[in-house]
Image (cartoon, rainbow, N blue to C red; front, side):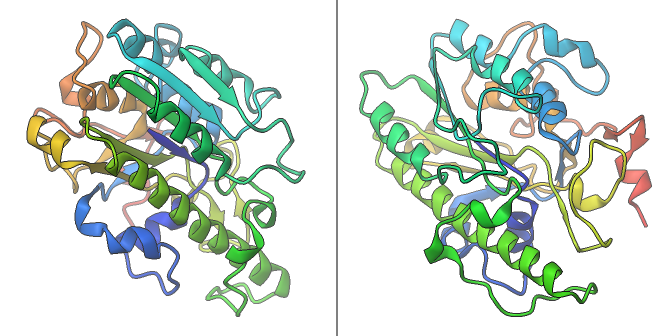
Length: 317
């Protein structure tokens, strides 16, 4: 399970013809990927999003986040669980997610720096991933929490991915805007390479394997308004909530698990616990197949963001 950070422009290249080639590796294997076309996050910030998506919390029952997490459920189902993070485990923006992560059988935090400082690149997660897949046993669920496009964008990718340097397409014509957009698109190019490597690791496994990717939330990067980043639900643009989500499966997994093609249905990631449990063939009295986007029983529901704002009504026009 790969958790991206603020990577909504990965969405644009995978789903639409973005004018820049930000996801060349994923585009080459697009036929192998189940892409979900209409996914949003319940919040525009990490704690709000993941504290619902990885627990029993949702927009109807926010307090469900205290009633159990997907990691606890998978532990009880006999899986070895791992949380590998390139985000620091301390600080006001990190603590609640860290509590969820600590529910894993093994949790490894590879970055202790604030995002305003130089941090390890997300490729550090690959070394740990390769170690884990060599351990005994096939019943493993590994969460990779990327730093992704956490600001400052320029610090999130190595020099060889400093690819986009020309004037980007934007209505906001200022040199500082161009630099920020270019850096963000370079992060997407780098993220594409990391996700391709994760899929390559999964491909080498003889056991049934899959890779699920989603972003915790999106960001506004001078698309609709003269602003970049996201706010804690004080200001709303569509780009802050629209996120990419896709599933790769190896042949062994596909031959043993029936996945419903609900790629065009509306989905919000506060139901991720149910979807991940479904992918892992785990059921309990708390899981609900109608909330799993991969299940034939899936039912669309009202998507509420911010303070009881109906996403689909608000952004209809």
